[in-house]
View (tube, one colour):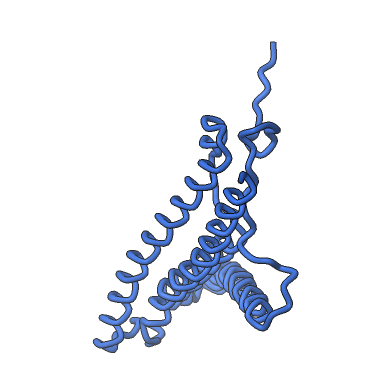
Length: 195
């Protein structure tokens, strides 16, 4: 006996409501063209920091075990690159709505307007949480900036690490705002079509 599990995105019926795309990618306005370039910059930062982190680790292994002369700055550079890769990846996942989600709401509720309203409320909650985390990230970054802290080995300013968080939460908030606008428009259009 086999049990078949159904993914919520595969459901067909009254409970199936597809996610609202956050951006009308076909739009030709200056705003959406600028956003497209921003997304490419985010992707480039994400890929470059990930590749540099891998190369840094490989060179550290070679220097430590092959040349027996380890590079002490790796303890500072590796976390910095990892932070930039993580936060830019977080922003890109927010933009493309690639978050991990269970889709339980669509299984329990049949009313499409209610599902849309719950998704809108979820996006609002995510925006609030992003704003709170962004506030504390900025508070921490400005504290280090005021102190003029530098890393131990490389003597690089600590804000290079801190601004990965600040830029990540700021850009995430931007994309959540776009998502909220799209979901609110979808909800009002769905209610307007019912009349």
